[in-house]
Amino acid sequence: MLKNADIYIYNKQNIENLMIKKFIQILGLSFSLTGIVCPQATISVTMDIPGAVEAGEEFDINIVIQKGSLEEFSRFQQELPFGLTATAVNSGTADFSFDRQRVRFIWLKLPAEGQVSIAYRVKVHERLKGEFTITGEFSYVEEDERKSVNLKSGTIKINPSPSVAENLQVDVAEFEQVLLAEKEALESKYEIQCIRQAPFNAESGNDIIVRLLIYKKSMDKFAKIEEIIPEGFEAKSIDSKDGIFTFKDGLAKIVWMNLPPESGFVISYRLIPSSGKTINNLSITGQLSYIDEGRNIVIDITQQDINLAGVTSENVEQFLASVQSGVAPPPPPKDTSTEVKEEPTKEVTEQPARTVTESQPLTRQPETRYSDIPPTLLLPVETGIYYRVQLAATHKLVDPVSIYKKYNFERPVKIEFHDGWYKFSIGSFAKYSDASDFREMVVTRKKISGAFIVAYQNGTRIEVAEAWRMAGRD
Image (cartoon, rainbow, N blue to C red; front, side, top):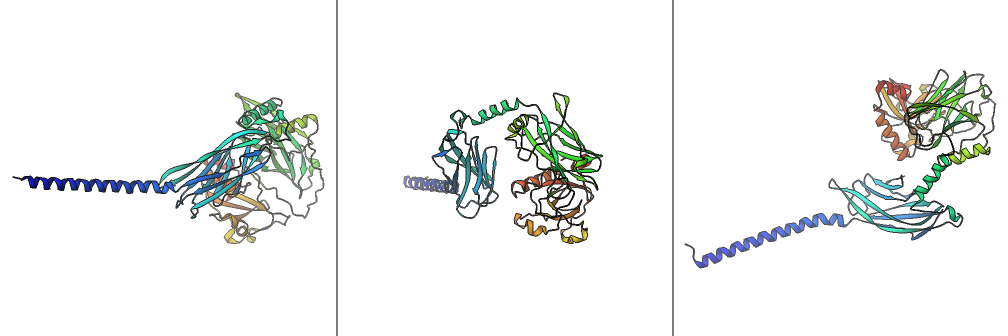
């Protein structure tokens, strides 16, 4: 039987043991809380902006991110009100983009330094006035968990431009709706139409350039253009605005399953005359057809002596007004000479979807054999249906390694000799969707805006539409 002294000692030991356990638990919790809070507490974002700007002017937004030891995938983004546009000033190792009023800096891997500074420039539309609030968010991944830090908001005042009449000034909060209403009012004045600029000779060689203005308002579904080309001319696409271009038996055809979003846009193709044919032998007739509430609507394409070179989605309604009033820009002078000029010029290259702009000055060269291409650079022949992304084409053989080294492509650039051109491409891709994703990366991240997709069957080029028919579009 326990005595009183024994009971006292027993209870004292239990109390001490219990206190030690509690102390260890509290200490462990403290370590746990410290482990959670410390890394995130080191991350902060600050912004430097002006208090006021003038409409029509530019200003810079500077961002400083205190990121500590964070080095994983991260993103900083801000949204700008309608009427403000952004361009990169300092993006460091991040990929900068501005789309749908959203500014984004994306790092696949942050730099090792504890502080990251970025900056971009904002252009203010000349009609704006009023105030707007700007905030932002820095998102990052830590231990496979997505986290974010919100930027403290700031306010910028837009002072109206003294060069803009007061009745044309618009509050920044209402600018999007006002412009939309003005655009709808302009669109209501004009019917859906298609105008062909009178064909003209290219700056060099015998090629003839054809441009078409398609004004389609808000229509965004299926549409098709068919142009009947006289015998003795072959048609090849220059810029079809993501339409599928084909030419067979004297019929040039451009098909869109979904039209571009712009209310109006310009496409172009080139005509290659056979021996003895010139622009004087050229007479084109064509039609634009589309579906409206289940009905097939066909519109004749009209031809006018105008210049479509400067037409954009922003000024297309004003251009149509100038056409109606007879003050539209005149076309370039016609040169009926068939002489091939031996001077450098930008190439007009075959393209099923988009315009090639990443090219070198060219001169006409005699047709060359495949043997001129080094074996290590020669386009390999593969079996089945596959796709590649074409970057450019030249008449003169150049070294793609030296030209494209700065882009740091993970895939090699290969060369093929096709239709008298040295064509440079990257691939291959078994699926069209994979080729499309790669082309999008080339355009947005590598800034080669003229890259487009080409299709092959057992090493032979075919139309992309034909590849879809045989292998499906996936």
